[in-house]
Amino acid sequence: MLTIRDHVTADLFEISDHFSKPKRQALERSWAGVFRDHLLKHLPVAELASNFSATQGRPSKDLHAVLGALILQQLHDLSDAATVEAYAFNQLWHHALNIRAETDAYLCERTLRNYRRWVIESGLDRHMFRSLTDELIQAFAVDTRQQRLDSTAIRSCMRTLTRLGIVTEALGKFIRELVRHYPQYRTWIGTDQRERYLEMKAHGWSFRITPSEARVSLEQAGQDLGHLVALFASTEAKALPSYQIMHRVLLEQFTMSPASNGAPAKLEVKAPDLIPSDGVQNPADPDASFNTRYGQGYGLQVMETYQVDAGAEDAAERPASGPDLITHIDVHKLTRHDQYALQPALDDVAQRGVAPERVLADTHYGNIDNLDRTQARGIELVAPVQKAKGSLRGKLNLEQFDLDDAGLIVQCPGGHAPQSVSSSRTRLQAVFSASTCDACPLKPRCLVNTPSSRSRHHHRIQYLPSRLRLRALRLREKTPTFREVYRWRAGIEGKRPSLTVLTASSRDGLGQFRHLIGEVPG
Image (cartoon, rainbow, N blue to C red; front, side, top):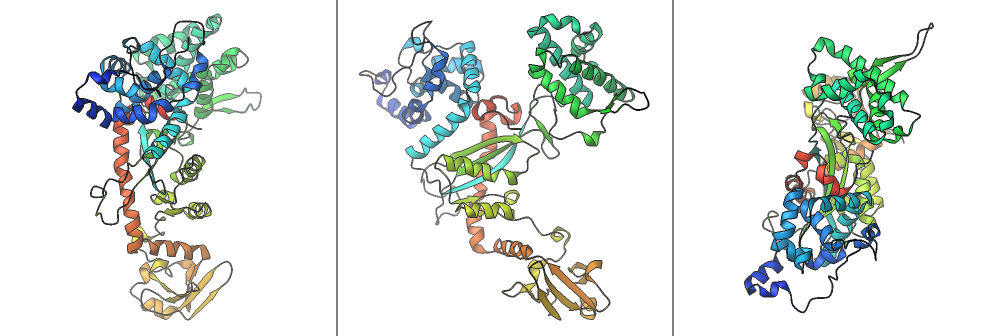
């Protein structure tokens, strides 16, 4: 039976009335006071109420308190057992959740898991993050006109498997799930397959083979994989999540050679360089992807507000002018580049009315397309662009040449003027004397030192009009104005480690963090 307490109307007598005045003041100043005053009454209990009857059944827990407990569990990085203990005995939790009666101060682990499952299935996790963040922004009058965006990685807690390990784990997972949900199909699985992928799994069968045996074993496991995928393709078992994973592994790890000369089609192992980076890394964590820099896991986008004080040397010295709040969180595959994350982040905050006027980001976000699209939104993107090709090898680039207002070269870095310049709608050109360039000590590093730019009498430099814009952006990065604005981006570098610690995201992959921000898009 549905239970929703009234957390708006105050009681005549509060439990905190028995506390001393300093203790009551400490409670109100703590995070518990902020949670109770600004967030508790805004929890989406109505969306969860459909799981309960209004007139029948045992009374449920107060939905405000349980939803609040799920959030506090993530905030303090607690296990289910520790969460239940804090819910029963911690006075800060009682104050934050407005638990007034002793009968409300108890919650078992199974109840906690059930509510968490309902929250995830109904998509309330992402809704709560957005709505509660927006409530804090209004309550504390946080200025959202300036925000900064960065990314980090969430390491998966699942074991890194070999290709053979991925296949055998996928087979074992499907067989276990099949027997549990559709026991009538148990006899369809051969005894040797059950022994190979269930009984022998406990003894690490896939890791006890020699390297010379690995390909043979992978081919054998692939044959079993293809057989089971085809066998259950027309049954209700194909709706099982483990079947979908098994089918996905089959497509990623193997290829079917066509039949020829009367020979049947044959399942062949794909070459390692053909395996996609966003393929299944472990059937226990099928959404994880692989990145050569971060390994196995997920990408995480974080955008937050920041406050600027012109007289402060750094963020630690500025006066308190409201908290910096995270306005956007998104989890995606590690194979997606950061440049594609900016526009979805701006769409998200714009829909909620907390869009920025200026966004600070690093080089990965600072391409021409993002600059144009943010400008069209009326937003200033302050981000460096990629360095010019060859600059890391000490080569000269267009930024070292003197240009006139029309973008034509006036003088090279060696102090020489071109013999002639020209321009069209598609390209610009400067022609230098071959004798002048050959005598210049900068020639080994110069743009003219390429086979396509040299002739017997002339050396030329050609560049596109779009290159002029990149030149202007790169020169802008060296100005004091740009550096003064961009230095505030450094604050989000400190947010990433603190976020990782609070959510244990580096240890648990998505783990509990998924309960806050939803599923990973494909």
